[in-house]
Image 1 (cartoon, helix red, strand yellow):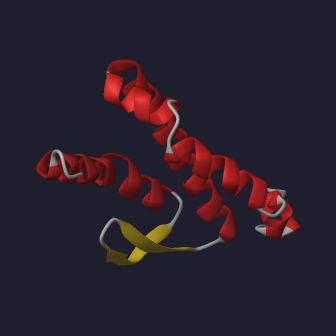
Image 2 (spheres, helix red, strand yellow; image 1 turned 30 degrees about the horizontal axis):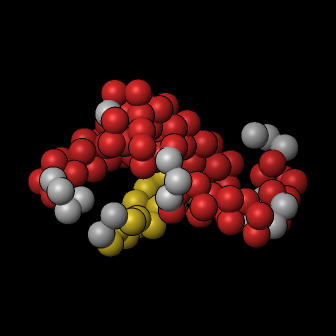
Image 3 (spheres, rainbow, N blue to C red; image 1 turned 120 degrees about the vertical axis):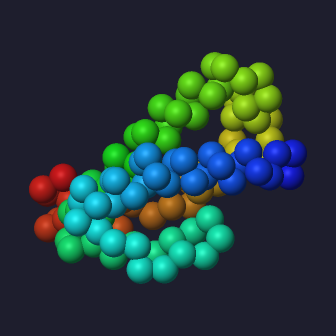
Length: 110
């Protein structure tokens, strides 16, 4: 953000217009509040919320992979030693089992 604040803001706006807002709408959700780069989204069902999150995450991972192939700085930040891999390892180690986050009635339709 600090290197190219205007470019980063433009990318965030484009991402919201092309991916975030349509994904939320497709799964019957609505944005109830925003703050900075975060938002609170309400969905008609837990299944819609999970499907929306999975679609958004899948698209982001694909986009990050493309950036890593195209941009050396991005590749180094995503794959080199640093906070990302360390944080990811810590989160995985400390996270409770997936069952903690979703009841069977939510997991089974997905």
